[in-house]
Length: 115
Length: 115
Image 1 (cartoon, rainbow over the protein chains, first blue to last red):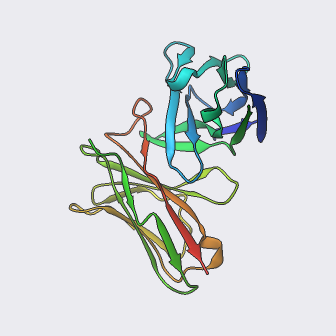
Image 2 (cartoon, rainbow over the protein chains, first blue to last red):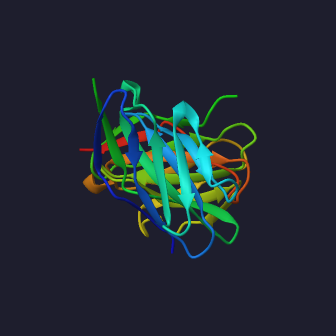
Image 3 (tube, one colour):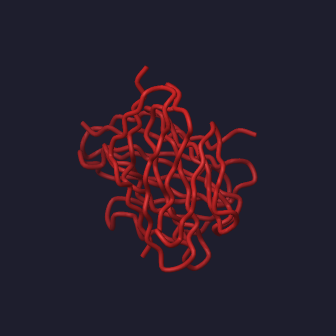
């Protein structure tokens, strides 16, 4: 079965400093991996996705993530945090069984950005 | 192109009443997924539907919950005889087809409160 573990429930950074949100996955075959962001009382927005192409994936708003098979990790990074980045971030693995895409979500990491 | 639409955005029901949540997928999308987000948790897969077919309902509670996606009109998630534990945010997502390379687009969610 597929699963993801988000190692930090909360991450606090200062504006202008780097962001690192950690995610480890478990999958019995080559997974597709995603990062979604959820702002308070809003829906989910896709930041980026990995689907077995380039291991370094660039997303929207300056975010990127690197797929490391040897470490089973897919950490999300951003060089410089902005106040508007404060939100909940979900690492997601796709359980592609029998031809359909069933997303399995991590428990989320709340990013707090201070001035 | 309008995104995934869900209504109502907020729904309050007393225990024992029925809740009906509606989801209109993006134009051209024929695959609909429902997820539930309990407070302080990630999203959990409930059901995957195509037009007039339930493909996978492995995440649906065995009783009181049902879903449909008719040939015409929105997808409906129906909860009968609601209980306090049903209070959650329910998200709908759609995709043009299935498979890992097709990302799911999420609606803004319906927040159900059972009093």
